[in-house]
Amino acid sequence: MAAGEIERFITEKLVLTPVPGLPEISLYTAHPASGVGRLSSRSGSSPPYWAFRWAGGMALAHHFTEMPSTVAGLTVLDLGAGSGLVGIAAAKAGATKVIAVDIDPNAAAAITLNATANGVFLRFHKGDLATSEPPEVDLVAVGDLFYEAELAKGVLRFLDRCFAKGIRVLVGDPGRTHLPRSRLLPIAEYRVADVGFAPASPPIPAWVFALQALAPGQEIPSR
Image (cartoon, rainbow, N blue to C red; front, side, top):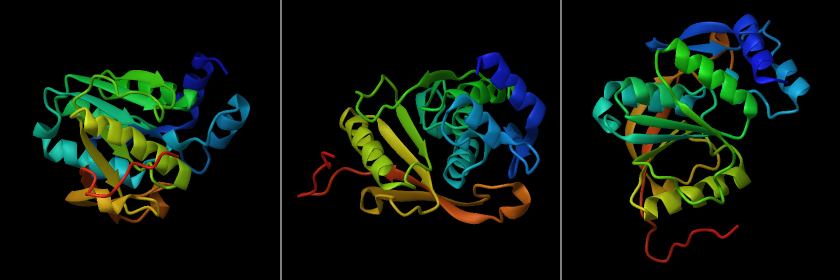
C-alpha cells in the first residue's frame, strides 16, 4: 500500500486518543471496530504493534515527562518505535533530535501522524539495527522489545555496542520473559496500561532500567 493510503486508513479507522496518565500526548489507537489487522494483511507487513500502547513504552514516556532532564538537549534513538510514543515524549521533554526506528513500514505513517498531532518532529528510519553500528546519538530508549527470544538477543547485542560507545541505554519493560535482568538497573517504576484495548487493559507495574556493563566473565552472545 502507498503511504497515503496507510495514512488515510489510520486517520479514518483509528481514534486519536489521549494516552492514559499522559493527557498531553495523543496517539492514533486501535479499537475493537478499527479492523487494523486488515492493514497489515493488505500490505504484507508485521502485526500492527504501532496501533497499541505497550507497557514498556508507557513507562519510558512517563519517565521522560516527569524527568525531562533525562533527555533535554540530547539526540535520542527510539528503538522499535511503534507508535512513536517514546520518541514523542522525549521530543516534548526537550530532546534536540529524535530518531524513530522500526522494521514495519506502516509504523512510519503512524509515527508521522502521531508526531504531527503532538506538535513535534521525529525522523523515521526503517530497518533492523541488530547488525548495525550505533548511530551518533546520546541516548537509546528501548520500549518493550524483550518479548521474544531471538529478538531479545539481537536487541541486546546492539545495545551492548551502543554502551561500548558511551551511549546511555534506557529500557522500559513490564518484566517480559526474555528481559536481561542481570544487565539492568531499575531506576523508576510506573503503573501503566499494557497492550490491548483500553477497557481491557488494567494498569500493571512497568519499570525503566539503565543498561549496565557486563560483569566479569560475562560475554555478549554471538548469536
